[in-house]
Length: 293
Length: 323
Image (cartoon, rainbow over all chains, first blue to last red; front, top):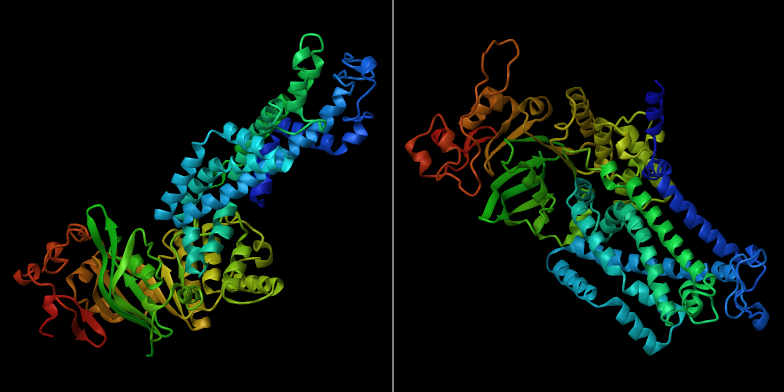
């Protein structure tokens, strides 16, 4: 009886609320969501969460390489700066770079994929061969070359990470559009006199939205890793602005004597990437297109 | 009666690996203003392709209209630029499809979709068009239209979704509604409601209806005139009474014979032997010749033209030649 009532109450619900209720019952997905939300809160509230400044150097001879203590929970680095404060402020860099870069690649990829999938034919073939070509370019080398040539401002890094990551989204969106295009509701919209642009924007893309969001979430982890790798190589965000990759790099000489300098930012990277991946997997399970056919 | 839609010698082909399949191969017929015409035939005889051709919605990657003309109130639709054609679709001619389950976009509410159909051809504000959408839902007798406006397609039954589709199709008061098997996918009890609704709306809005179906029982109650199609051509055309009482083409006779008659005890329903010919391998002469019980020598050699049998009654059969 209660089961019947529960389903009866469930029915007047949209796609989003139904997906949300499925997502809530997924423990790992919720763990991911909590991690990601916490990270954003930390990034926004960083100045309130720690009394230390992430950039100003301390009294170097006395303050450098202090081990974790009640004053400095995660110890201090070479310049006597609080590691926890630098991790908090560093999350701003990691989160904003990854978010903006993924946003760029998702928008680019969706446009290219939608155009290729909807127009089809020769246009599709040409666009998708170009995508294949872009995919063949070794990404890290391209990034290193560009940054070495044009100096590494944050905006350039965001742009480059976005502009080199859209191909997978383009393929995904194209495949979705192709399968949606032959559906009856698209024909029904054409019959009513809707034009091509309207059909793509109103009927095709909204139907791919959940798939795009899931893919984007899963991509963010990868972007954070790439950014960390760039910073580790010294080509990412320039010091003294704190970034996690650069912090790992900074502690590599003292890995055995002052292990906390590299280990904690490394852990922060790992937890963030795991958080995003769990969230992405949870979203995929909740919004699997096969469940609301 | 004034002519609304006039199809002349329409030929539509589909590209297949084995060559061009003539899905529609020289169809001609007319629909008068406010008239209800039934287009009847077996699956694959070209009924739906005819409808899509009228809308000029044959996907270019799959096929093409190769010959003929389609006039709507004297305007040749096949000669219109695409942009003008878009103003005809939904505004002058609308279609209701067979599958209400998949013909609605799953991510928008039904009301939103009716509203969109309205805003495609009418410049109304957001509030006005929403009011109009609810009014349309009420017109198609949707129960509780204000509430149903906010429902998603998967929250509605098949019959209700078909009502939404009809509301969308009629939202710009088209002159011609093409109903392509509008009730086939629905429960029998709902079928009758939908057909009744269409008839009612037709009278209310004064539009013409082209009803495409394979079910002669459905057309018998609904339409004034019937066009029977076989293998891509119209083979008989007659007012309903004449067609049912004096079918002139052996194929029509066969179709009528295979309708179950209540009260008459029969062990088996009569059937037409054989099946619809492959459009890539049509028989020479009359297309029905290989299945026809009244076949003559001439039938396998020469394709018959349309002969006039009576008042507004045409038949594509050599047997009708002398009359």
